[in-house]
Amino acid sequence: MENHLHLIASAASLSKEIGNFKSFTARCIIDLLEKNNSHYILNQLELYKLKHKIKQEYQLWQEGFHPQAILDEEMFRQKLDYIHNNPVRRGYVDDPVHWRYSSCRSYMGELGLLQVELIDV
Image (cartoon, rainbow, N blue to C red; front, top):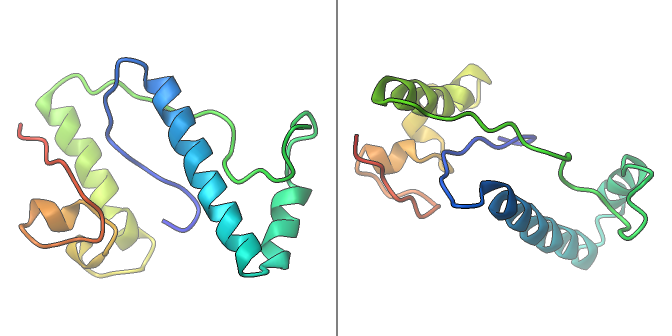
């Protein structure tokens, strides 16, 4: 989505891995914005940066994340369906498989832009 991300992930230290992901992607996106002289967006990232973030010039990601334990197959399928249908609810596509960035394409046997490790339940 254009302003948020949903994912199903597992790690021994999920908080650390999410932090690493956010740090890496923020650095890449900010570097690209600077390279392309995207001053308006950079100014917005600077303006809305939290005041206590004194070691960085910009803030791309909101602090924290909202993990939910997936306890059974039914809950997994509910979460996966929610993620896959998000672009449909937003009106971007009529069918979840048409969203190029979704794992739905991989689950339907189609090639997507992102590498997806399918979870067999």
